[in-house]
Length: 282
Image (cartoon, rainbow, N blue to C red; front, side, top):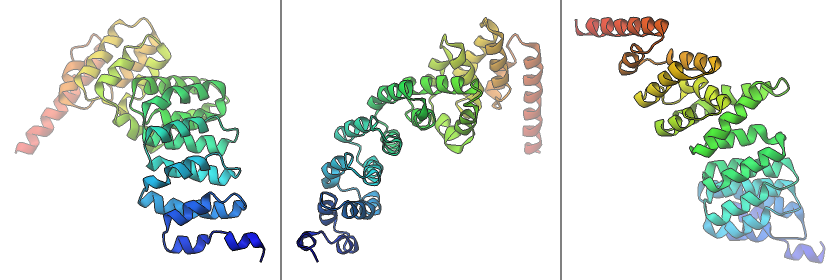
């Protein structure tokens, strides 16, 4: 046993006792990277279950560790500490040269949800397209006009890029995409539908089925787009979006629009609803 071993933190003992101060001391042990890696591994389940604010500074320091494993796990744990100090540290980690550290920082920032991170994520997206998917996933989680607009803009760019079309499919086919769009408020959705960027407008209309498609304000705006927009592609997307409306109030709005096919469809749907309600009363 060497002299340094006499002062080496006993990670196994601290882990068994769920001794956070002991594990944090081990995390700062500069002489042996395996000690730090064992310490961060032990801290993950403990701090995920019971976040301890006293761990914040040590975890922030660990974002600069020489071990990528330590850096990634520190960024992962920090999602449980939504302070400005932590957000700033994770934003700094977006600039790290290794993909794993930056990617984990992106995920944690999206979970914390502080909107100050959005412009830094957009800057990362502009300078490095390797982050299209992780930044896209993060942007859709913020429920903020800047993030939602740029998420739709990213989708439009990926959709028409033959090399990256698989990334578009990946982003739009998972449960998280649908769940995030369901949380978008009608007022935010209308802001997107007021965009003068046709690509963003088309993506917003294409995915309205997962958003607030039953809101009358949204439906009226889509009808207005269908009636007035100069682009046939935008009009087509608007028409297709309206075919996903199922509520009686929404169908009544559609029944008054200028498109004859939609008029007929909406009135038929209303008749089906009326017939179903009549059967239930019998």
